[in-house]
Length: 102
Image 1: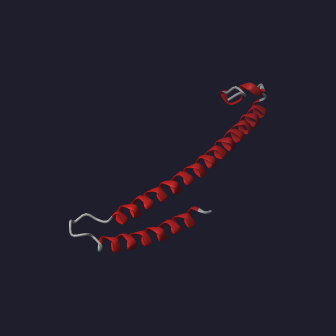
Image 2: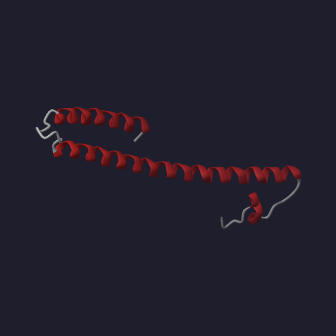
Image 3: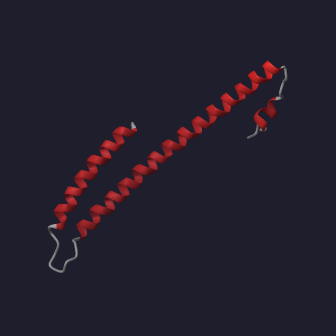
């Protein structure tokens, strides 16, 4: 699911939750404390946002891992090409100043 679509869905839910909260505030008892439904709506909203953010973090971590792999591959290719141009040869384990075991 694209980030834009997730943000749009989240915005739609936020608008709906805000309307529910405003309606629940009208039902404040005479002692001045809001009803439990008011707090329940806020906690549901917080949990939903937390879940969405955790899902998004997982996606970002996967994306970053993929990008790191691509950067390492490109760096290795550049080192190989530089070695070919300069006439030097680097053993596999000594490329990029790292050992092949990472």
